[in-house]
Amino acid sequence: LAVCMSGVTHSPVLLDKNIKVLGNVIHITDIRSNSQSVKLSKFNELFLKYNFNPVSPMWTVSMLLWIKENEPERYQKIAKIIFPKDYIRFMLTGQVATDEIDAQGTLFFDTLSKKWSRELASTAGIDTGLLPDVMLPSSISGKVSRSGSFWSGLREGTPVITGTTDTLLEILA
Image (cartoon, rainbow, N blue to C red; front, side):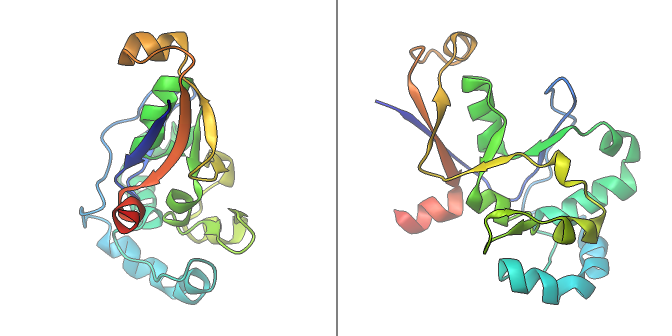
């Protein structure tokens, strides 16, 4: 009847202007961005106000700042930032977007107004133009395209639900 995506949270998939993946994804359990988290902790009051979480290496903001500081050539090529389940949905539908829960995991999303926050993104010098459209996890976000059908074996036209993070679906289950 439909396909829904779930995947690991906070782990940014970086896309270039041609929507090609820029290198490996930093996993939520990777703590290489610890020093960036320490730098960003001065903004914890702001993060707590809008996202109810303090910064740590597991949040996307720290990972992106690490990439910006340690892989500047890669960082400069970023056109969009999505997450693993979003990349699979992109391959199926051609749509670049994420859900509200993964958006919150960046610490750039204002959970109260349900939109990207320039103020929050500026903590790490991130341009909000790099961030994808945000949809509800339960929304029909597209249909399996011809290339998505060829790639996946799913029937062309099958509705694709936006989906959400593994953590939220674990709680639901």
